[in-house]
Image (cartoon, rainbow, N blue to C red):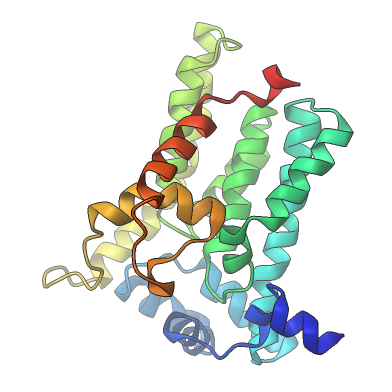
Length: 261
């Protein structure tokens, strides 16, 4: 039974060999705290995930399962916060909340990163908690998780941009509340500035960037990658995926769950 689970379900991600970026996570997390700060800055990435993984290594060892369990724990917590969003923020009936949560758990894109020894699932957790406490208007908890998100991945700035747009477009906020929300959203950025200053002193700019520019086909297929787990590395591009992705994005962007129920 266990052999079947680890070969025919997403659990097989637990036991596969480390790939390059996961090996980098492991080698970096083995360093001292000070070395982690310096090396993360030179790699142009925030330090929090590596620092926490360093502690995780001390507690649980350095096997593939041990390292990936850290991301899997974040995935479990992300799923719980997602359920809280449905029930406490969107006020969706519990029966439908279970169905949506099951679909969330089965999402192949999330399954992939739930078992990867990288910072992405931890970032997803902090980003979701940031939104959760913004909706609940709890400034202290919002500040904590937003700052943690910034210290985990720079994509947290995209989350902040979306929150600023939300603050100024939400009908539930009066004009004075919108500016108060703006202050709440920008406060974690001010506390993130010391890391940015340190980063600028440590990082040598110039030279070619190691990530290739994504082709247009990849950009158009993002919804398909997110919702059906399609990856170009698993086969050649399928022409039908482009219109399917555009259609999927259109449907998802238009659907309002609360109005449907």
